[in-house]
Image (cartoon, rainbow, N blue to C red; front, side, top):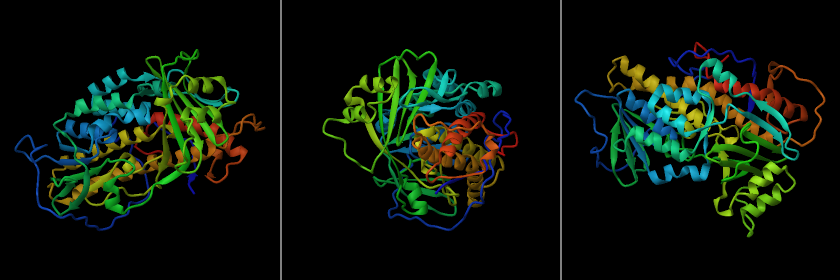
Length: 478
């Protein structure tokens, strides 16, 4: 059972990026551990130090968005970086399975702080959605239920406006900026060992590499996480997601960025992704690994959404069967420390969350900036790299400063999974607006009509504003 405590007014003031996203959190736990592997072969031919002066050497497991953004931030700070990716073709092809990614204004601002040229390419390749109407609608009638203002908060802070971008395009831009000399293909990290002066990663093919820091950016099924904290099953959300990309331009394209159509135990997301294409996601509550009928996924979706509004049924109808994909949705419980010693996690490896609020990629990008910032502070302190205590302290500061914001988003995404699908069309709620501060504690069980209404019409719009704005002047969120 997840709980959201005291979502009162969020005070924030954007202040460049010095100390971006520092947040209060519970005190991190510490414990000793050792992860060891047989073998003594070292392969250090790739990713060598480029000069005689000792540079902080960062090993990154995973070449997805989080791993590549961190590598770019570390490279631009003069660190020595190695990224280990088991299959670059699969990384860049991930967009086919997961669709375009939403980048909120706060995440785009972080990318600008990390690398202005790469950020410019990303924004040019993306499709701006934040300057149009976005929000929630009734699935049957198509009538708007709640609208989000994604433009005004960004413009007030001088931030880029929210947009979506194809994952493959995003990863290509990041990969080119990082460089293929830093990203090692066909290199799956399966184990690691920490000593007092270094951390060593072991690859599936027997190679091993030494570094000062290891970062697990290897996704929800992270091998680094399992080695740190033991194997733990991911939690099935009770929902399967079907997705499709269609070359179809609806008549409302100039006025609507994205719309989430709501129904009982199912919802449907439709977003403009540019170039005359629409991306959609259909979420449906069903047991894990339920088989699709012989007639195919499209036929099943047409049956599930047959009485929904024309915007939904037309998008399904216009999408060929062979481009409709399916994946079961998982997340994990939050943990309040993401690393031990010289090792830490980021993105889905640390805090995988459900995709219903579109925040997973944004949280990973923010993680990267905060982690790079803390490591830069350590390097500037001129402490000896061999002193693991200094590196460990820097990693724990990164985790602590990210914990509140990430925990909030994680809890909100779980709540959204319950509340979005508890919506019932044509319900008359029967009471007026109340301030967000009236929501002191909401427990995720079976949401009442009032909780559904408050979450959808009061909390979500203010939550999106808070997400866009980023952080307070002192780095806190209060």
